[in-house]
Image (cartoon, rainbow, N blue to C red):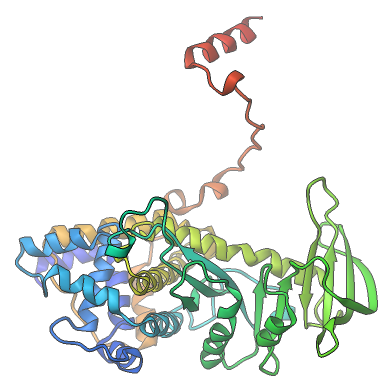
Amino acid sequence: MDAFERELLRRSPLAACVLEVCDFVFDPPFLASVWDANRGRCYEDVLKFEDFLRLTRDALVRHGGSAHARFLELERRDAEPVDESNYYRKLARTPVGVSRALLREGSRRLKELLPGGEGAMPAEALAACFDGFEVIVGDGKKIKDAAKRLKPTRGYSGKLIGAKALVAMDARTGMAVAMSDSLDGLANDVPLVPALMGQLRETIARPVLSVWDRQFDDVRTLGHLSARAGDAFVVRVKQKNHTFVVESAAETADARGRAVLDEVGVLGKPGRSMRVRRITLGRGGEGEEDVVLLSNLLDREAFPAAQVLELYRGRWGIEQVFQQVTETFALGHLIGSSPQAVLLQFAYCLLLYDLVQLVKAYVAADGGVLASVVSTYYLFADIRKELVAWAYHGGGDYPRDARDAGQMRERLSELLHGSWDPIAYSKASDKKPRPQRAPPKRLHGGHSSVQRILEGRAKVIAG
């Protein structure tokens, strides 16, 4: 690396962070172990798995999800590792086991780099009663807008769903940690639960408390969620006519003073039943249905109903993850057309999201604020600018220095010292409160002209 490149990197700390973290997480021995354990009958020839992932990363981060643009860039420098068509064929045939393992093991390595060590600086603080659990939020994601490039898909109108994934997110760090999947994008989420919980139990030794929305409330699925001793669940009820025999009940209130009915009883029918706790929050507003939760946290004193409701309320964070992954990391532009290609891109996008969460944690620590205050969108926009500048000004391969997790944490703190920018990185909602919008006015006949609206407004002001 010459003097110019060293100075360029000094002025691009975010790009340096991303490149160094990628080299730490995706080091050749790790990628070789992921590939060898999950490749099935696939093999490596000219295009190694390490180079394949680097091409995918550059397409997503620097070219908005266009692998073609990345290959054009390489072709201008006569530096393409293989023909572009070979890359697409490898992407289409990558086994789904590789995608799952890449997310599961890659996120574990990223968590080692959190400020102060894994779990030392949570993005979101949870109630102390849940300290004994690894709190996981689960939800399904349909990966939409698959391109109709495959010959059997041509000639159809309408949109195609590429695949389906069931994702687990760490509630404290905000990182996606595992996924199970189906090549059929229209598949139901429920059959994917056992595989996801199996992956979580392989990597998390302490008890898991998983939080789920509706459709996961049948006794069989609840049994999968609590199959390991010590594991617990909080699930919202979908079935309105489920069988529940009450043993005891207590009336309490949530943090906003709304009435809460806290019951313990038996869910289900003889032969397939489970003793659970049912917590009902009566919202009472017009058009608002009650929130009914099921849990095997039966001790009302140890786990107050208000805290359980607040924990479930935080479940919407995973919806934000999906939205940000789609909008920020080019998931709306699918590189490949096969379900296998779609799932690999989704897994890699989740890892990129996790990487930005890691950078957010250091930026937040530098500013003395919670990581949830930092805008993922604007932070990633700056990361992309710096990576593009590095490539545009002729930056070559980033120098690789062997570091362990502790040394990497020190390096990231050094790189991101002074990086907090309260103007650029604060979310809009944190800068000023948003006023409540009035309901939209209906135009006569469903349409009008701008001039007539302006004239009507002028008459109101004058009159």
